[in-house]
Length: 484
Ligand SMILES: [Ca+2]
Image: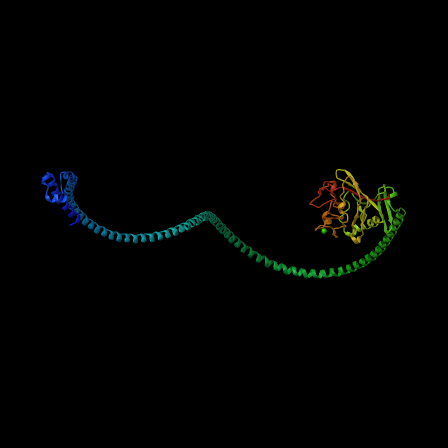
């Protein structure tokens, strides 16, 4: 038994005795054994009473404790039952735990399996996604192919229609062919008939041919006779030819005599001109003169009556200025109309002293103006007749020659310009070209002043706003000694 229960029981027994003594305790009835302990006197009860009350309470508590004991026993039984129940439940729980563990393990395995499946499915889904892209691509391609097929079907339909039409045409042609064959057959028959007729005609012709051969033989004999007559006539022709040759020799002799007379006439004319020979135009009246200068053979040139010698003139396009080097060197044209005096003469003249250059220009509208330079000088042929100097200028047409100073003269056959091309060819005449420059007074002549096909004409840029489609229609270049 629990020691606490024993203590309680002993206390209860002791208190029960004590309480019974207190209830019946007159001072003279107190048990001896109690008196022995406490030496009870007249004040004893007062002292003991609180203890007695206390013990009474303890007894009440012990009673209650007994009830509690009983209750405790019941409780203990209930606890035992509950413990058994708890054990049972624990066993059940353990069983359930084991089952749960087993189930959890099984579920874990299932979860793992499901995870594997999910991974596998994910992989499949990804693969499916890729496949879907591929499928979309393929669908797109299929769509394109379908469109192509549709187009091809349309084309095929068209081709079918064409084939149908062609079949119709074939049928038509077959019919035509049949007709043609029939016609050919008819013609063949007819031709055979004609052939038979021809054979007959050939036979007849053969007979005729034999007759003709006989005739030819007769004609040959006639021809031989004619040949003999012809030979006789040839002899007569030869005699006439010899006679003609004699006449030709006589004519040659006469021509030679005429040439001699012509040369004599030229010499006579020259001698006549020498009578009008002058040294310069400075004192001459307007007209054509034979000018003789030191170092230069006498040459014809117009004097304008104001001391100027004309060295170049353009007025009607009657003379072609697209000339080669030799012609520009020696001069060309007609001094009464269009001409160029020649570079060699200009070299000698301008080197002999200081010369002024006067250029008179005109447009198709009749307007005229001029420019004058005070020191015009050109170099020798050895240096390609360079424009060595022009000096100071004045005049209304602007200065379009200054840029050409120190430039060599160029012709279509002597390219001395500074351009990759040939200015003389492009501009249609010789000049002191740069690349090709501001002026070209020996260019092509355009009567209406408008150039054609980008082939430049006569230009002096500063007088027509450098519009090189404009071509001047009048030029006169003149020189005069500066000392005049
Ligand atoms: Ca060039």
